[in-house]
Image (cartoon, rainbow, N blue to C red; front, side):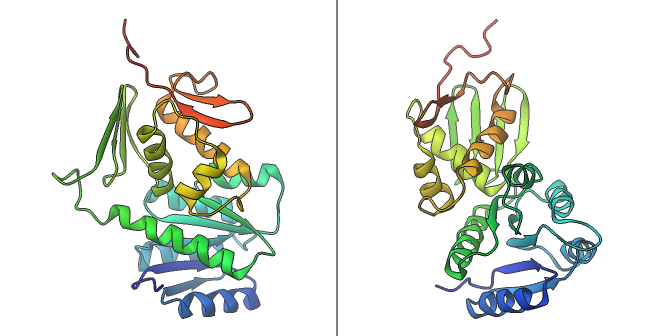
Length: 244
C-alpha cells in the first residue's frame, strides 16, 4: 500500500535512526521533511507544511519533543503526532499524550509496527479532506446534548464547540455509534488506532481523559463517559442532561 503523496515531518536527532526511518518511509511512498532538533522542527512545520503526520522524538536538542508537540497542536489540531522515545515510564506516556500526541512508540521498536502506526495515522488525515465547514454530505452524529461533525472535526456540547484531533474524532465516533455499550481497550485499539493490543493500555485511558474534558461538566466525576471496572468504557446517553 502506498501513501499517495502523504507528507511527513520526521524529527529525529540520532543520525543513524533518522536515516533508516527516512529511507523506509520514503520507500513506502511518503514525502519526507527531516528536522534534527526541536527549533528546526517548528520552523519546518510552519514553512513547509501542511503535514499529514509528524514523527517526533522526545529527546531533542534546543526544544524537547513535549514542547514541540504542544506548539504544533496549539496551531493545528489536524496533523497526527507520533512520539518516539526511549523513556517508557508511565509518566512520560501521559506527558506525551497530554502534550497533544496521538500515539506513542517506545524505542527500540519493530519497523513494521512503526510503519503500521504511521500508515493508520496518515489514513486518518483523510478525515479532513472535506471542504471547510459542514457540507451537506458531512457525517454528523447526535447523541443527547452531543453533536459530532466528523469531517469538520468539531464537537458541540453544552459547554461550547471544540476542535478535535483525528484520533479524538475516531474514538468519540465509536462511543456515539455504540451508546450504552461497553467498549474494551482492545476494541478501541483495533477500531481507532488500527492495531491489536500492541499499544500501552494507558494510551486509551488518556484519550478517554481528553474526551472527558470536552463532554463532562466535571471530568473528575464523569457521568457521561463511564469507566466499567475490568472491562472498558461506555458513553451513557443523558436524556435530560442539562435540565434545570
